[in-house]
Image (cartoon, rainbow, N blue to C red; front, side, top):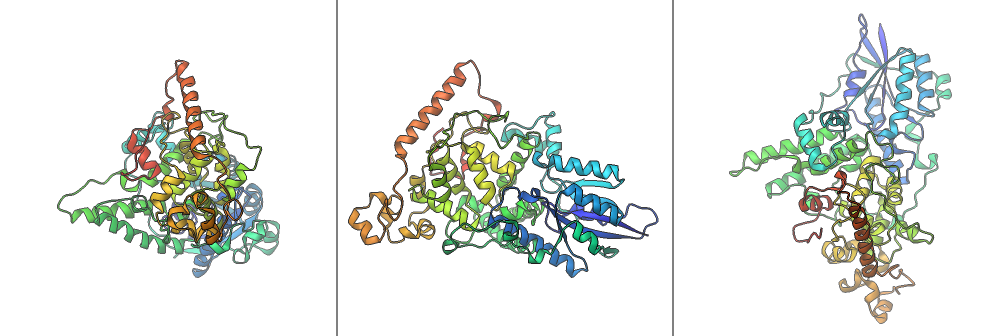
Length: 545
């Protein structure tokens, strides 16, 4: 007898380290000899971040699904891709295919709770076993919250303390064996009813999503899928090993590279093309191997994979907070009276027309490629909020969620709250070290990054490339770019606006503290080092806090 099981892909778009896949391959029925597997994905307008999605994000998702389909076809199966309401699609599959078990990876963020609760209720009503596994995060966020006494750890250091009590995250599970598995098929009549799609022929255009960047400045093409992710992992581990041998860690943070091809694994982790547990343990095992050959050994710890731990922290903070990505109803977010733009200032920021080259280059790179270095994300976010334009971080979250390949709802919102001094950071007193001009001169001294994404400034000498409005008019004419005509003049007096914003923050702070209150516990970074690590700032940058 054969039992029919569904593996529902949502974020974990891979075959390696996939506990849900192993569970779907397991036969729970006594007397049964084999499993008939139905791997599926449902475009329901929400899953995998498709509610708010730009071209590059949708392209990456479609490539990831196509890669899964290719791998499954190599072993005699395929990925069934449907369009429609998840509950309606699942009900028809249960009815017509005699499904006995549904398996999927946990989506811990509260934005998925209504969908998942509806699926659990459907399974219960139709006597289908429903199994959820944790593998998109290193630890189960619910376990972290329970260990912390039933509430999320409100500071990063408290999070580290809590997971230290739990212990190290699980190692990746064994690879799947398809020896006693057959793959199911979907009858043509049912396929029409549940809108079965041919993933190989789908493009972002089929979903009404079109490219709105500048292809002429696009330098790096990101390709989705498990196959590409594992290939890139090999290169990234070589970079990690070089760093360990050189006596440092977090290579993309310690030595930020804006010009060469990025080695970030964040997009692959976001869609689950790469297992976060595999990445974590590969890096830590590599560190232990390098350290074993050193005369003076340095202990491992969360600092080795700090970016992954911040990701875990923000996930955990969002789990029971459906208003996490907004200000007014969010219990952990300070209510700051942001400017409600009635002009085109928000659009100028989005399109890279602020008149500040580092900001504009980054925003145009985002539209063109779907990715930004973490430092550039912080600079542009600071500029939109407390650093310059005084526009709410909520607008920034929505823009990044649409265009960043790796934007998670919880991680993206957490970063924006941090940078805007709204949460996770010393009360309205974040460091003032993210000036787009000062950092541009330090991070891009030759102007190579700016010239790549702002070709209109390509002829400006290094002295003026980050402040082109200071160039004499004769030089501007010689460079073929008149500021205010061919490239925008600065939209604000940055020095004045920064002072005004700082004074406003201080006034709000004094008002809050003057009421006899204390700093909210979720607005207390542990120390200056935490601020430095979050902003990815080297030792030579002064942190004013």
